[in-house]
Image 1: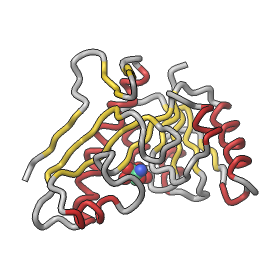
Image 2: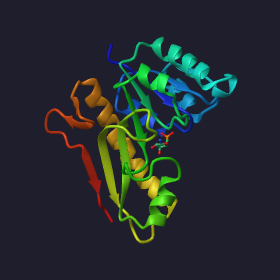
Image 3: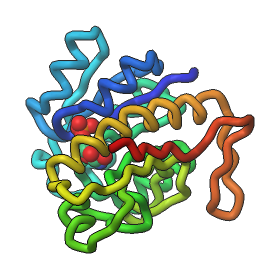
Length: 206
Ligand code: GRF
């Protein structure tokens, strides 16, 4: 079955971009009750589940429940879209080679939070986002696609976030589609795509 389970914690704009691109989303699962993305998914007739991490005594028991919910939809791929939980080795192993994440920086620069603020503080001239396979190493893992934008003199964290997010919505559906089409080849930690599609999008519009 060529479907995707999307994990969210909040707004869900990347999830929406996947739906807009007609990615076959079997379900959307949130660890946060009331996450805005849930309502968007429901409106579009996509099944949703809430597995509140706060209800579980340990990370392992939360991840067991999450895994059960995911497996109920038998997805080929688990796509993280603003899912704000650090996952343990057991979960990572369970879905090894079939979990993708989108991160708002050009990895390996700026893993973790507040990426736009940190990019500005470092004075980088190029910023962007990365789609990567999820490994046990937070915000690391084989890079599937990146979108880069030129940083402008007058950029703020908010303006960077806005332009990077636009690019996230371009590259994430593309990367998910490559996965589902069996086009991704991972060799010694580096990903290539069968065919002629570019793994880099560069937007240097003024
Ligand atoms: C995005 O910036 C994504 O890169 C990061 O979290 C944010 C989620 O936004 N992992 P949304 O919920 O998809 O709108």
